[in-house]
Image 1 (cartoon, rainbow over the protein chains, first blue to last red):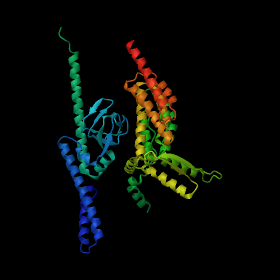
Image 2: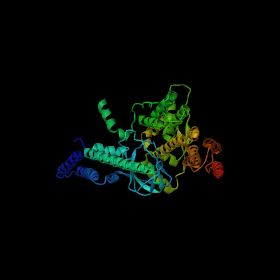
Image 3: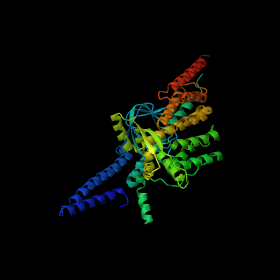
Image 4: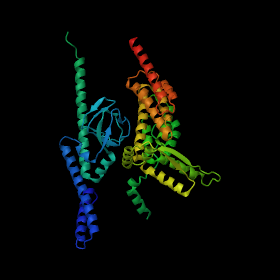
Length: 197
Length: 293
């Protein structure tokens, strides 16, 4: 009973038992209260099971973070607004829904659907490595690291798949960097080779 | 019984918002000259908010320790001014200060703590509440057209009810970090630090002047709003374009000093905007001459 899913199941069973036992005596107060809690427990259990299923699916497919959307809150930004600065302490993960957003230091523009700060949660210093600025008005979904940590602690299966997903995204980044390095080395070698007279 | 209470307190810690951990450790590599200023900053923020807030102060300061081009004097000034800006004056802080004054004066005969009447705007007061509540109220005020309505609040310790009220107001600090105002203050401090950092990279001689721009912002109400607006005008008009390479301003420190001298209490910022425009025109003309010659 240490984790959330068995606790919710136990809660649902308790609710059902109490409702059934209150029916013969027509104790309406208990019936109403327990019915409300039953709905709440069922909804939260469904949400938790869905989350584990979606993270698991994401690990074996496109490594997307779309499963986090139900836990995110919406924020609107205008052109020129800075979402965060380089070296600022990172406290949330962002998902770009619409608009144009640019990483100032690298000049890189982030596409719609991009996730920002998913690895920051696991890094020891939790610092932003670049400044993110809004170029064209848009909408961002954000979730605090605290919320993700909460999901992680409540649900070991989610935690396990979340770690696998984060590691997979990290390895994907390393592969991209290696590819870029190889391309740069090849270009440098080509320019250094003697040209025929 | 004590252990049960302690467990209940721990369980409700998130809701109560208690933050009474130990003070953070001084950052590694901090010069000896900066130790008293940083220690003072830590204790100020512990008293203002709590240990995790003081830890945020230390983390923010850490990025400047050992930074090339930054002397000890400027680092001390960053530490001092950052602590002051992080302990910004909202109605909660004023209540805290008034209570402290009352507690210090208690027992000292003949010292009566006078009343303080704070002049705020209603959006400023509501901004001190948690965002979940404040945003709804601010939307309602905007719909009614009352957002800028002036409100006077008396902070008094003359009666028992006055002291009780101050205690209730001061207790709101537990939710301060969820407030609309905190989000704005956080963005301001980060922008200020970011500008100092960019100055150290692009024009180190201007860094002390940029650090000192924090003194433009002080107090609450109209004074505070004027300071923030003037600060943003100088940063947007002079500092940022210089760092972006759009404005060829060789002496940014001098330009900041000139603009600050033109910053007078005027909501329309006529003199300040004119001075900034003149500085920009001068710099662009010199830049064009240099490019042509």
